[in-house]
Length: 148
Image 1 (cartoon, rainbow, N blue to C red):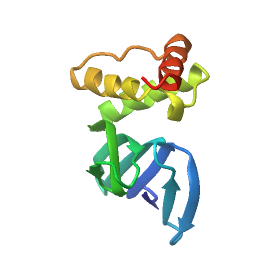
Image 2 (image 1 turned 180 degrees about the horizontal axis):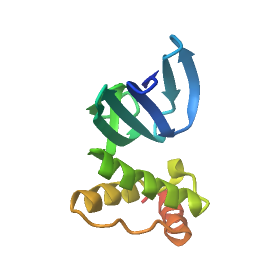
Image 3 (image 1 turned 180 degrees about the vertical axis):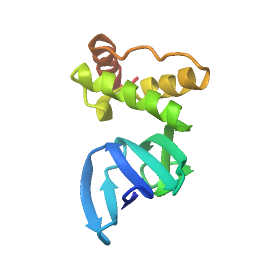
Image 4 (image 1 turned 135 degrees about the vertical axis):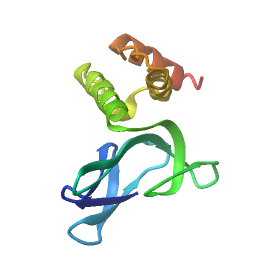
């Protein structure tokens, strides 16, 4: 994943994700590598002299080389899209949903992919997402371990 940081102009960063390697290209650019099947969130924000011109957040699952994928800017080749929203109000809602997961003591990388799909659908519909609780997380872990 290509990450760019030009202060107050173009700020693309990883909100969460387990980086296994990083290649520094310059002071403002780097490439971060993640393992297949890992879940991560990429925030993209661009501005000009008058303020924000674009903001988006994508939560994706890194795919194995043989799997189909969805393309996403700055992510090569792409990933399984779990959430894709743009506009600062919606990005802010997703960031608050991530904070809630973390406040429950759960790493957002480990949360159920279905939760991120749920967050996407609820925010798109103008509704509040349900809170991801430790009970929901334990149920997800049991399903994952059972191969369901």
